[in-house]
Length: 172
Ligand SMILES: CC(C)(COP(=O)(O)OP(=O)(O)OC[C@H]1O[C@@H](n2cnc3c(N)ncnc32)[C@H](O)[C@@H]1OP(=O)(O)O)[C@@H](O)C(=O)NCCC(=O)NCCS
Image (cartoon, rainbow, N blue to C red):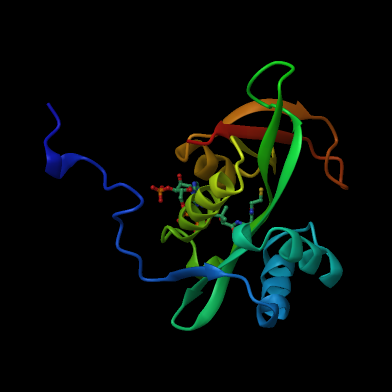
């Protein structure tokens, strides 16, 4: 039998050395810098700000010692479920997430997703999904650890021709 001490701590109980908070307008240039540093998929200021205006609760940043080191940006969409056949549903879509290289593997990526998913529930979403490059093992591991399953492959989804996995999970 697994004793209480041996159980992994729930994400809610993990001591965080960083702060997760809502994105603010002043964070835009820093978030765009993190996006450009970490990902080949980059967006205009207008794109970031439009998502923020529509879904402010699920656009979060991670702050470490007063410096923004990561972000997550999501949309709420209505469409066919990724988990149930031919069912229309309200879905939280993780559009972009990144953590600066020197701040990775400290639980920041997980915390950004967990906190964003809680807010998706407040927006009445019943599932969450995202696209990820099939070669992006760190991100695939992260999503799997948080209960996401690969539900689809999108052939040639990215501009350079790489395929994407669609990964999804139910929200509580
Ligand atoms: C993916 C990313 C956001 C993860 O952020 P992070 O803060 O390092 O994530 P966490 O510390 O919460 O890691 C949680 C889990 O993810 C997995 N993971 C994270 N980095 C990993 C790596 N380099 N190799 C393998 N698995 C990794 C592990 O399962 C890890 O759990 P563990 O620490 O118990 O082993 C970060 O690597 C990143 O910004 N990558 C570049 C941008 C990107 O790929 N975004 C996703 C696009 S779909």
